[in-house]
Every structure is written in structure tokens, then in C-alpha cells.
Length: 170
Image (cartoon, rainbow, N blue to C red):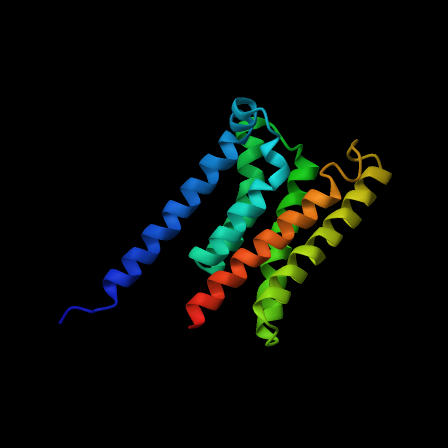
């Protein structure tokens, strides 16, 4: 007798693979897209965008996988970011997924959980970046993406995840 869950599992694997490939292609093409449209597309936090999409449309394991590999992929393909910053970005994205699921597990509502996970992961990122700058491991400004843009993207990403989870709960 054939298991009726097989098509669902196959669809889930397909969606996961498609999401991962799309995320990596998007990360790869961000510099080109920025040049073509004459806008700094990197300011919309493309890795976090891909991570939020993975958190919504795939599963927790895949979100962790993307969190850890997107910065590495970017480094290997474009040489940017430099290795210490790549590790910092991977940690930030990993913490974003971890904190979101930890807050959900504590029965926190979805919107505050994703909002807080993004904000807390950014705080961790900026704290560690400050230390790396202070010890001259990296040479950059502490804040390179304007705070207002970060606030807007955080609200938009949180709202998208909330709307998806709200629809799936009904």
C-alpha cells in the first residue's frame, strides 16, 4: 500500500531545494542587480530576506543551513565579506533562527518572536562587530546600513512572517 504522505514529503523537499537554490542565486546576483538598477540592493539585507523566506516556506533545519552557508557562499563566490565578518554574519543569521524558535517554544506570539529574534541577533552582531573593530580584526564603520533602513526591513520581514503564520493557523 502506498503512503499518502509521499507527495507531501516530495513537495516539501522540492520547495526546500528550490528555496535554497533561489537564495544562493539571489545572494550571488546582488552586486549585479545593484549595478543594473542603480540602487544599493544590499541595504535590504538580502541574506536575512532569504532566511525569512526559508523560515516561512521550508523548515527549521533548512533555515539553519542557509544561515550558516549564505555568508560562506558569498565569500567563496565574491570574496566578500572578509572571513571574520563572514563568521559574524553567519552567527547573526544563526542566532536569528535560534532565538525565533526559542521564543516560539516559550509560547510567545509569532510577531514579537520574529521581531525580537531579529533585534536581538542584531544586538549580538553589533556587539561582536564592535569588539572586532576595537581589536583591529576588521576595519569598518560599526553601522554601515542606516538604522532607519534596518528598522523598516525588520518590521517588513516580521510582518511577512506573521502574516504567513497567521494564515496557516486559520
